[in-house]
Length: 216
Image 1 (tube, one colour):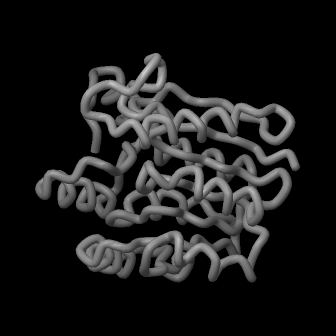
Image 2: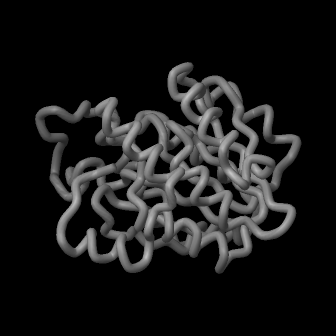
């Protein structure tokens, strides 16, 4: 989980308390020095978006250990399902273990492999109601290309890390950020800012979370 502040701690305690399973995933990742997953306040936000939008069929690009998957699966309406894509064997093993312990395991299908290879296999089941993108930043525009075709009109496109470590407001890529990654995220954000195609807001979470409604 990302760094915390007294305000974030207050929000998490009051509105986004983790249950024992989510806490175990968080601790497990922290012990392995893996801090890429969303925070519980962001998980609760995803649940609210799913509930408000009544998103029934969701694709998640980037499972990690299944932390965000479980937050979303628990908000699905009756008959809902989430397909989550995971390519790292270590993360796959972790996620399968945690999913097996969850009461929503039957609502989750984990697809193993690189998202570039897996996403085309889901096209026959399109359109989907929502996609959540939280994977390799270099590929965000590729994933948006897929979403533009396979998410229904009025569906949700949600992406995490869209402030790219607080570098998007800079005029050029800073040291430590690959220029291709920086320019790619700039392009991704600019595409979602197009009012002819999307109704979009970027939320100033710790890493930036973009929420877009697909208009056409």
